[in-house]
Image 1 (cartoon, helix red, strand yellow):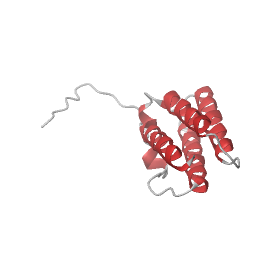
Image 2 (tube, rainbow, N blue to C red):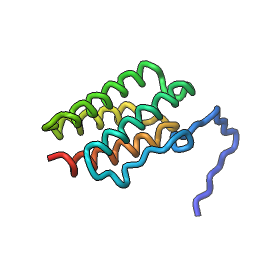
Image 3 (cartoon, one colour):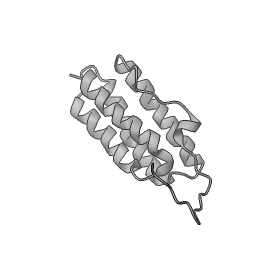
Image 4 (cartoon, helix red, strand yellow):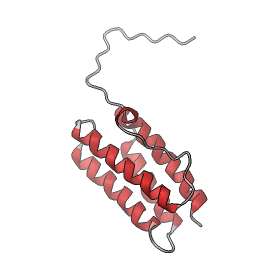
Length: 119
């Protein structure tokens, strides 16, 4: 069994996204539901920004990519590559931010869903 030594460890007000709200890509069946969950990611990102867990300028860039993905999905003939590219850019910007781990995981799921749903 793994043993974690936490001597002298200091944690400052850690907030995990899963404790602030619910984003779930488990039962997505269509583009409308995908858009809905991406909007929840934006909402969760806003909460993390207000809690000073994500830099404001970084959040603006992430939000721009999420919005581009949403706008593309809502087109009559969305370009799958554009959607995936923007979701992956948002995910890459969040990588390494401990308090955003669940959002990174959600964005990875969103990429998989987009690959399946969009032709």
